[in-house]
Image 1 (cartoon, rainbow, N blue to C red):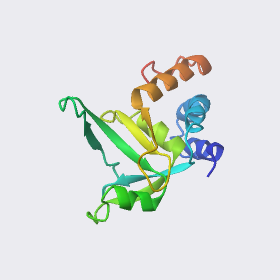
Image 2: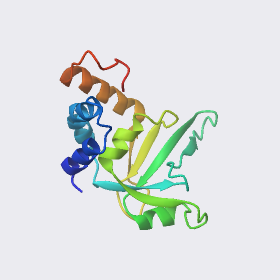
Image 3: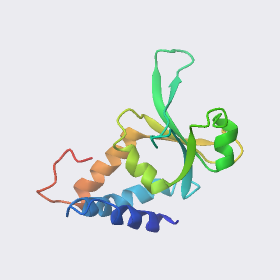
Image 4: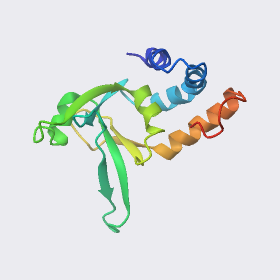
Length: 157
């Protein structure tokens, strides 16, 4: 599904509360701009049986106390099974998720620091890290520039 169709799907599936679809439309250009830096329109995300995205804790080699929580986004289903050990745990599933939805969801995923997008099938050497804080800042800026509505709380993003 192309990026525009993903945005429309996000709008169509949003709560029809009179505000949320407008918010999504307002931040759509910002999400699209980020998504265009990525090679694939959808990625596979490892999920537990409750469909929660699986977090991985990464530690700094020089300073193991420095840690961050990441979600891996794989370009193909085969990449998930060969690099994540998904075959070891039959409870885990890998689901294809549109890049726009991934970027939209990361804003609300408080424990997540980044999403690591693997950009080349068959290897984990070529990856792009997108930090939640960066997406959050871009979304907030986009809302301020493109959407002024007194009924929207200032901390919506």
